[in-house]
Image (cartoon, rainbow, N blue to C red; front, side, top):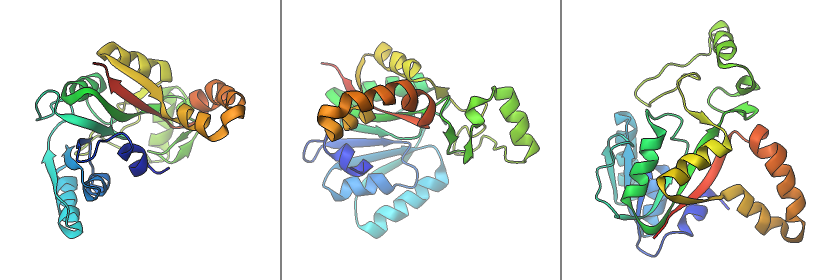
Length: 225
């Protein structure tokens, strides 16, 4: 199941959706083409321009706005679903972003949200294996030495030492502290795919793959009534 299909299954017909960190607008436009009422919030003005151009070319309506994920310009209890994919590592305050998503979701509304794994073996931001297994000071020196260091800018935090990386339990604690209930999207997928043998695969996933292999955690959160 691709990400579009995954999100769509949780949205009622004609439901209101917000894409937090909507980037160049691909997912937002895809959701709009399915008949959902879609809003996109993005901090990078050049991405907003590209997203609006995409919506025009694809003949869909999306309310794209430039702004910070920590200050969503929408009323309380407004959206049925939120998407926040590969965003939390780049913002100034991930906890505040999660609080804002909780605020704008309707009761029983849900959100797909990802957090970058502090100890994932492959870092897709830098396209490097093992960089997250090093102490950050060593990693920074190595990146500077090979001249692959990134700097923070219009698209948010990009430097390895300034981005927000989490361990799974840290992310879950943050979300539950705000009031969300949570489910690990990958664990749910494993249960559905392997059925009777899911226990074996889940054990491998919980012990090795989730903490040390996958570069991010995929979590669905639900706003309790």
